[in-house]
Length: 224
Image (cartoon, rainbow, N blue to C red; front, side, top):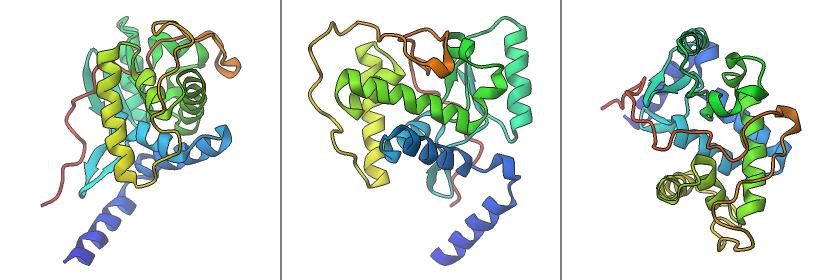
């Protein structure tokens, strides 16, 4: 029975359009982590925390995800996600999170040519990896970096850190220096210095994701 379920899940995955497969986020995360010199599990945990939904009992990230006005959306294709992003921006709503890593257009859109760029998994993964690396340098641990990636408000950051820690444990490969003591050589509310030459113009210190985790309807439900 277990083998049959695995075969069914594999056939369902292969039947998806190539551009809609959840492994796009995963492969982009691994490649960007290698490029940035950070643990792959850290970036994988971030994309799962942002867009992970259950597919046949497994938590998998989804590349065509969006969050606007506190409402999450999982689209079947990139074209649908792009159309939603453009329609949202056209009505003046710039507080929009897009893609595998839910990068916020309002705070970071200046660094990209168009919202479509946020829906390109490799581009988004490279941005998220660079930011996490800088946050790790600032805060001294990957767990603290993940919390700051989400928010610099302690209550929101701590909630996100707990989810990040849980996902990392499930991935089964905990990186070194996961939860080092926080550094005290600068004020807790200090903003990081701007330092993203590839994506110049983004607002330093802004969270890439909403203050609370999205709670939208998943595209795929667990199978019994």
